[in-house]
Image (cartoon, rainbow, N blue to C red; front, top):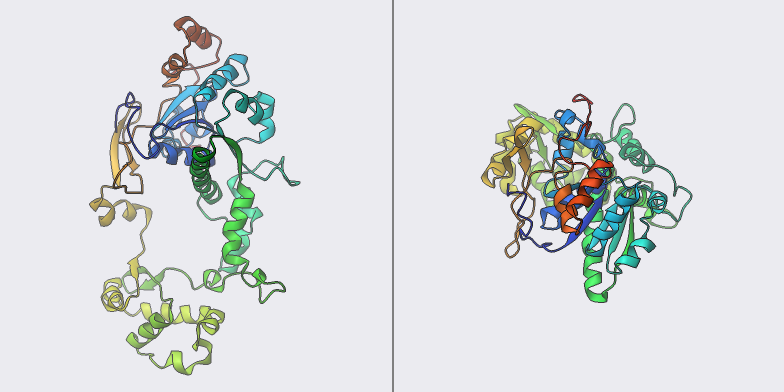
Length: 419
């Protein structure tokens, strides 16, 4: 990773300054994507730090794995925004910033005196982005939101039971946080482009509930896309309990048979060439979708007869993809990822050698800059306050009053390693 002093380090978003007033997952995931492409992301942390610093191994030192994987390429500035000097520093930052991102409810930003009207007064070109639970135009506006709550709110647990789970489950990923963060990243880039044309900034809201409702219903509104409805909810292929990794004679594999030609080739290769022509359940795409569970069961039964390698050799020349099922450990050893140097090791100030993942995009003209280590809590507090024009005495007074912190501050980011 590049040194922390390497601030002019290229990338498609080089020269864009982002004030990042976000914690945990959704906001930090969006701002890390901006930082990965060269934006100067200034992470404003409260005294004690982003709460996710304390989660997992390394948490006692403020370097838990979730934090490390969400905050590389950023600079950390500790500010107590409830104190006048903390607010003043944000307003000074905003004068030359391009984007401000927050992920508390707008009412909290209003109470802090950091609402859009206040920020716009100091910088009318600022893109002011709120990432929070629910649109402020509806009755849920003031509700708090977390990933599990949003997954429940958009029907994901129902989808898991319809797909065969014995009890309703959440997807075992921070799906709502990360999907909304990805959407927010795209929205921020679009807002920057709009500003280049208009010359004016704007306030933008990216609510989790509405974002995830579109994600889920994009697949599962299905028959209710039509008015009146032409069928029920749910894309049958996705909800089939037989849509799963298939057991082969030596492991598990993904085998996706999808198009008319692929079904004909698969059944021909496995000795049932006439089935698609003679069985009325499978005669066309609409009928096959109605009976997708039965079709997938045929695939499951067939795949048990040979090894994963034998199925790859037989089916891939026919255009039918077959891929062995990774677990977390084998993914880390994937040969393709090794070919492209996807995993990188770097040295961290308190945790020693750590592993990170490369930026998952490839550019011919403005490649992402070298990766920089996630910051220690307050690592750049002095540096950034100095850039804002604060004198040495003013900076020392801010440390003394607890408005800001730097690495080694008593009690900073204390937490339980097993949290």
